[in-house]
Length: 227
Image (cartoon, rainbow, N blue to C red; front, side, top):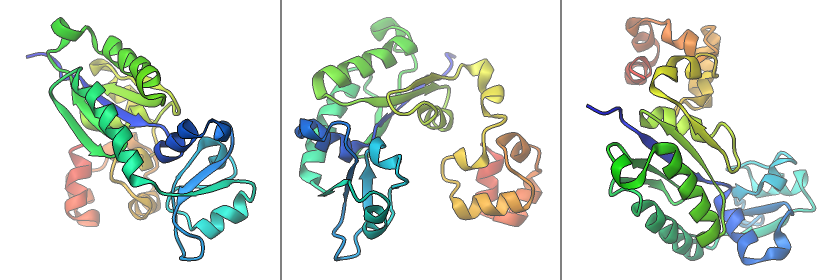
């Protein structure tokens, strides 16, 4: 049975990147997309230029303005983002019929067994990146790995415009020293609880027994154990 090959595709600062695509004058400027400051709106997406000032997703827009007063603040244009997302999915669907959208700006591709038709995983990943820039005008970060969890972690390692490949025999060494906060689904609360137990890395998490994790985290503990 062939080793699974999963690609996680994550569009870089999607909403802000679409705004910069549609208005070239915004290229290189800090762009913050979100709700109204007057209505206590929050940041949906910040460009990488805005992130350099400390602006983050889910942050109150009022806070973002204090951090980056020179930023360009724009309201969400969901119809436009959905249009671009649809074009992205067409590119992904041309690589494999097994495409699983996770949100408007990310998706998993199962390319297991597709080598005869489309070539090796790295080649498929690079082709996706090339076509994304040429046909859509956006960059994306990709992770290639034997499962979704690893692919998701890998795609976030070299953003923006990154590509990280995790081979089957490199899984343990890739994960070992990563912070537990990199685990998909581990939020700040769970991360803090793990750190209070002296667990900072995924390697340390793997040393805990099933009973220890289940006792502390319940059903979440079982999922952490089975990662």
